[in-house]
Image (cartoon, rainbow, N blue to C red; front, top):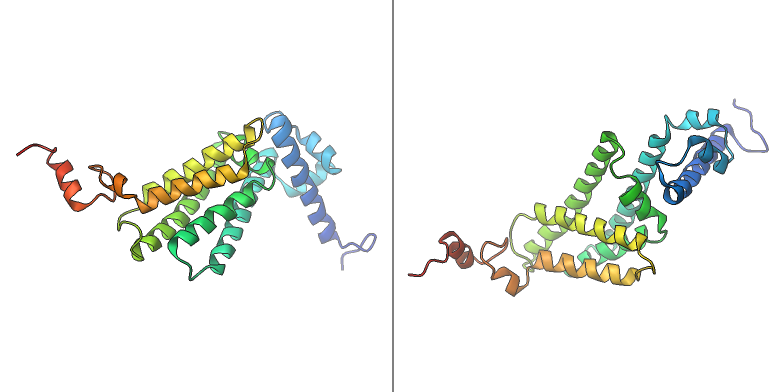
Length: 232
């Protein structure tokens, strides 16, 4: 049986060290920058030896990947729980809930979007692959809600994959701007802009649907586009 020190089991001490390392890394990566942070600085901030660091992580990038994955997982868990709570709500309520909870989760600490959308970009092929995994997960989440809206007759019946990917990109861009902007942009304004953008993209307001060749356009408009709008 493993010995305890001060009444704390070795497993708990190790878990505590890991959390201190992640907390110190989050602070340094989003202030000094990932590329300018040294492992020894992370260890000093956490009060942990470099030997203990390498018991938990293979290197600095491993810490960054862990933080990136944790932030996304936290947001996804919160959004999933919130949507479960409004399972029988109308499509617009569910889409608004999805966005509101996501924005609330990732803006509770400005360091979170800073790490996800600035520091974790362009570091390595492995991290880019992880980033793409999360883009796909979020896009699938949005696509599912869009299809639900279509099934309830409040959105056109069409393929929403590209729309969902575009909306993930819009959210990324707005949150990157939010964390960098001085003076800070109101979180409510960011949320409202994303909500309006998502609803417009999915619901396809009448005027947008009248544009020839636009996804979700009425059949007569699509046919007109294919004919090249030639006069008869």
